[in-house]
Length: 305
Image 1 (cartoon, rainbow, N blue to C red):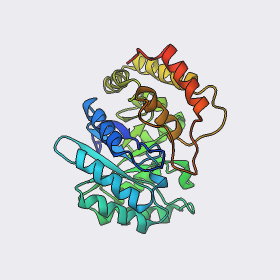
Image 2 (image 1 turned 180 degrees about the vertical axis):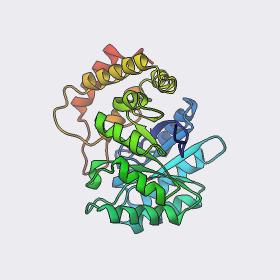
Image 3 (image 1 turned 90 degrees about the vertical axis):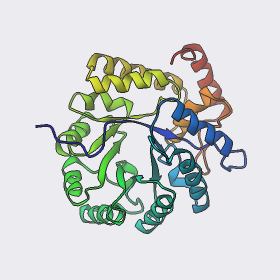
Image 4 (image 1 turned 135 degrees about the vertical axis):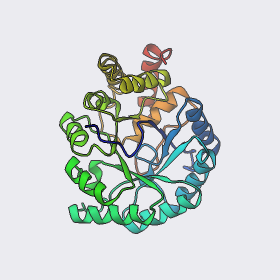
């Protein structure tokens, strides 16, 4: 018997943050970026995950970004998500409350990362945060930086206590983890990156967490459609393509960089006005590394959509 999902299958796109040379938000470019995503057909948008540097923001910046994002996306037919990353549950609650007052009703939350929560503490976090806002829905960003990964059986226990936890976001390309989530927490909608979306679709309904949408908008929608149709040959063909692109664009980057370094470079390749700089102390691609990325892109992928 198929388990009913708490959230509909979707293609979820990130809105990234363009910083000026003085590391202030470029509000004009940010507005253009949001509108471009809407024009590309994305009704499911989020801001301030890892690529959007939600981990790096003071309260002033957080409020500035949420105000602009909400002004453009809180309307009929759009389901915006605000990412809330905090070192404490109190900070998480305060940030959700601010966005709630602006009309946001879908939130992407992460576990506090200063110390890894055990199962009882994780349950308390979810029941408190989700329970405080019963008319909202929540997606959990399940990433190793929080000190632990939540597995399928634990998600199922948490979901039983928090009916408005509706989805998860997983960037792992590990098949065993994907299988575990799909089989043991089937009531939740699992958003998977390009590297594991095809595998997830081979097991049942899941959603796409797209990272190549700004580079290849048409191919990304084809990928999602193939997932809806369970077209495995097309799914794995496009999985291979996205993997190839990332490998070739960043083959010369030998150091480890935070996620936004790659995602912001994708949008900078399509729109050179959109800087791929990161908020300090994080350092993204150097000018030379960026230049080589552009050469590869212009030679191999510029005309692909």
